[in-house]
Amino acid sequence: DAGVTQSPTHLIKTRGQQVTLRCSPISGHKSVSWYQQVLGQGPQFIFQYYEKEERGRGNFPDRFSARQFPNYSSELNVNALLLGDSALYLCASSLGLVAGGGPVSYNEQFFGPGTRLTVL
Amino acid sequence: AQRVTQPEKLLSVFKGAPVELKCNYSYSGSPELFWYVQYSRQRLQLLLRHISRESIKGFTADLNKGETSFHLKKPFAQEEDSAMYYCALSLINQGGKLIFGQGTELSVKP
Image 1: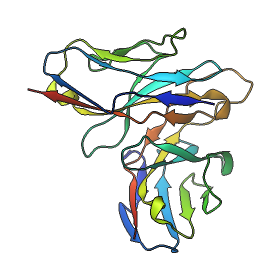
Image 2: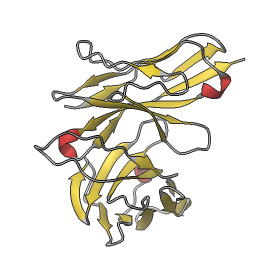
Image 3: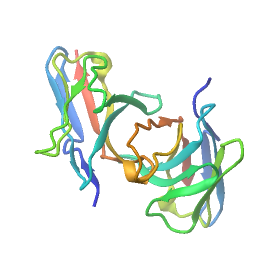
Image 4: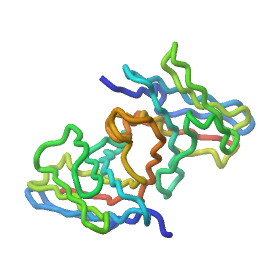
């Protein structure tokens, strides 16, 4: 297994444009999360999807959206790009969710190489 | 609010010296903490998880709930340890969402 894969590797867009980033999880993993990593900072959570449903959303504007497909791959869409959207976008996959209120179980996330988005 | 703080942006040591990368967290629930590492031109990868209390590549980390800390330690640094290190808090009640610190760049000099 190649691990989590992301495409494209690099992307250059201009302000106001729209972008779609893609992620393929590790085989057997049903949960995908997206993170934004701005230069010099740690990754910041954007979304989590499990079984094609959004299960978590970070503090990002509505210009950011995502979806998960039946094969558990995922897309992150960003509309009306701003200069501040320039970052490394990371996708992480894991086996599945921890049920709220249920027994706690460990849920390791495996990261992809990221897509470097530059907005000019 | 949940927060992870890594006070040092850069830590520079000589080969063979002890290393301690600091991490403090703020979380009202029972924390699940991790250390991730990113070597040059490689993807982010898990180094340690506090639950398993294991030692990886000579690194250990102990969760101190009283001090809300999860410092990463290694007694003798190696040049190949040079990398970015991120402390992360997993929110169990939010599906394992990770809250990362800002990261510490470890530079081990020969």
